[in-house]
Structures are given as structure tokens and as C-alpha cells.
Image 1 (cartoon, rainbow, N blue to C red):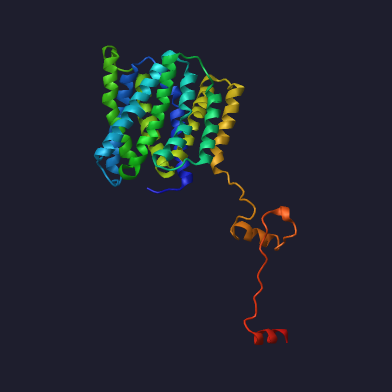
Image 2 (image 1 turned 135 degrees about the vertical axis):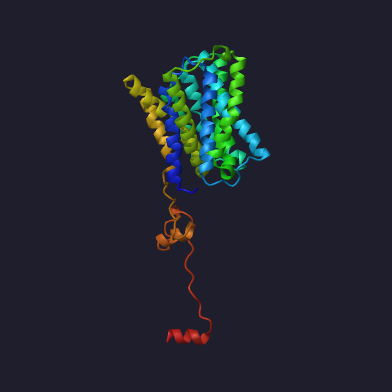
Length: 340
């Protein structure tokens, strides 16, 4: 599947908006056993994704290789299961702003680690843009109180959010976005169930209430299936470092949803953070003016000299321009003929 970079940016943005705006749905299941609910969510999502894969044209590979399987296990464990564990533990030892600010640093991590893993030098412009987005995210989320465990959980959430894209990217061209999403959801289920067993959630298991069931269904269909597919399709087209900056949209969507739900305006710092995040998102797309003398008509001193009409009178204008060479007559007879 091929599409333009603009469409890819739109898909990544859509994925982050869906995830960021899911705060309303998450509030509906706050009293339901967390890991058990997440396992149910990913199990339903895996069934839907594998069903969708049967309806679409097959990718380059329909079954993962040994390397793919290792990446998929890592993706399911870190990007899905462990991420939820870090958030759960973090919220017990830190204010939500601490977790949100930590996850908001993912654009900078992806802008640096993505190229380094591919053995490329990070693009300076993207790193600067990602740093601007992270600074704006910190203002949007704010800073809260925490202890050592909360700080470690926040760092773990950041690492898992970064791994979510880094581990998926190498498999997207061969397996496709649908199968990468399906396998990662499937592999996350036993990890979450094991965590629920260790934490004693299975003893408190119960059927979800109608509102909780509706919330879990929304998380499975939209926040997992739709958002995962949108993000992975855009990630496949853009690459890790360019798509990673769009993670900065997530806290903006969360803030907008909170404002609409709670019917109050955001604080001034959060509003300033939104502006900064928007500036960081726009920075990679700004067209910088080329240096004087660099353009389609030529590069370096030659093009500059043509614009200066071969003027060399002003030594401070730049490097000395070479004077045009005059063609010399090839013979005396030719010279005589030219003179006559």
C-alpha cells in the first residue's frame, strides 16, 4: 500500500488523537481489574485484526520469521503489556502529570535512537523539532510530585512507548501493519494474564458492567485496532524519526478531551505548551531559504558571480570571482581576419 507523506502524517496524527482522547473511556474502567481488562481488550483486538488480515491482500510474508517473532514478543511485552504495568505502578506513586511528561519525551528518543539503530546520523532539524515538542509537552502536562518508584515507572513508560515504534518498524514492510498489530496483541495477552495472576487480580475477577464492557469494546476496536493500524501505516511510510515527532499530538488530544469533559479552560502554561508543541510539529516542514548563490542556476561562487555581473570591485562581498576568459585566436590569419 503506497500513499503520500501527507497522508502518512494524517494517519499518525489520527492514531495519536484516538489514543490521547481515550482518557474519557479509561475513566469508565478505573474500578475494573486493570491487567485483566487489558488482556480482554487485546484478545478481542487480536481476533478482529486476524479476521481483517484474511480479507486484505496478503503481505510479503504472512508468517513471522524467527527474527520477527523475537521482535513481536518484545513488542507485545514492552509496548503493550509492560507499558500498562508501568502506568499502573506509576499512578500509585506519582501524579499523572509525571507519567504524561515522561511519555511525552518519546519524540526526542525516537528522533535520536531511530537513526542510530539504522546506523545513520540523527537529522539535526528533527532532533531540534523533537526537543521543542518535548518542551511543549512538559508545559501541557505539567510537573507533579513523585517518589523513586514513581520516577522509575515513568522512565519505564517512556522506554516502552519508544520500543513500541522501534520494534514494529523493521517488520512493517514484510508483515504489514495489520499482522504486526495482530501478532503483538495476541502475544501481549498471556503476559497480561500472568501479571494479573501474580498481582492477585484473578481472585477479584468479575464480569464487567454494561458501561465497562462498552468501554473495553471501544478500547479494543478504536484505541487498539484503528489507532494501531493508523500509526503503523504512517510509521511505515515516514520512518521512526519523522513519525515519532507526532507522538507530541497525544497530550494535546488528552488536554482537549479533558477540557471538553470537565468544562473548564486549561491553565495558561498548558495553552503555551500547545503553541510550543505546534511549533515543534511544524518545524520539520518549514522550507528554509537557500544560501545566496545556491540554487537551480548553479552553486557556489560561479552562480554568485553571475548575479554580481562578474563584479570584483568589492573585496568584502565574498570570495573573489574569476574573470571570464576570452577566447584566443587560434592562428595569425584568424586574428588578422577578425581585426579586418
